[in-house]
Length: 206
Image 1 (tube, helix red, strand yellow):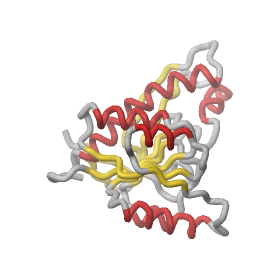
Image 2: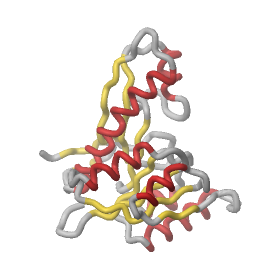
Image 3: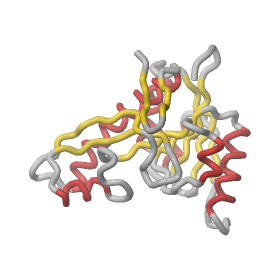
Image 4: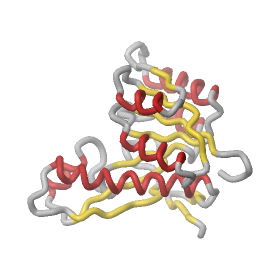
């Protein structure tokens, strides 16, 4: 993404929205030249919606309960994003796997963050998976989204040491701090047009 007009971001959420807040803060601080044009939640009670509203960002509750299958839900999500002229889609704690309908609508323009060093420990409870395995280092991964579970091309990763007395909660808290910085850095690279995808490799220009 480059040019004179700012990147228009749509954020999909399901929960608390701490990564959303970190992105909002960096945009408002002038660190990222972008505008969040909508926040969409599949959960009506997601606290992320309150965070967005406090900053005057349009919010949409788009619950999936009434949809017979995932592709029809995604098709309507695409229409909502397009109505807000979105260039980049961010998954900030969005607890659904996307279908080809969504992925093909925004090729290499949907980002997710995962609380582990992919390809290790995909899916839910990644922090507990890491502890159970006994790794010395965990962290977070920002990746482009494909139709798999945390399988898309990796953009950035940050390493977080695992302490001997860590619980899922303590490790999650430290990883979350890294998430806020790493996600913002990846978005900034995209907005500045410094990312190219070649097969599974994400190439970053200086």
